[in-house]
Image (cartoon, rainbow, N blue to C red; front, top):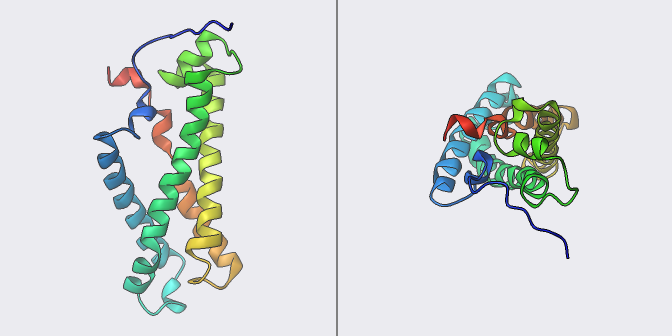
Length: 167
């Protein structure tokens, strides 16, 4: 039988983002950031030329951007959960500690977290390109630019915050 090790009872910060009641703060914060990014994209990419109004564009996209973006964040967090908490690959303790508590203590932890963030960003891009903006922006290049912008700005940057700052 495989030995089960519990390295610590303090969960990593990114884990708490998905638990009640913190999830309410996370959802509200994501909604505000997503709203600002959607509005900014409307102006930056001059979507007024192809949309009837900012209100129409915002109402037609914000819920999808928000919900699908949160789903993408969960996908990235799942990678960190599997590697950092379940540890199926039996990674070294210093790497697990880096993933869970202080990414900048271990270069490999920064790499793992960055990969998880990029996976989330790819999903944010795909969701927005194929679902959210598919009926609002016909020009594929413009739609890709908007979806990439949303993905890069709204990817889960909080994964990089060291948990030790908060305990």
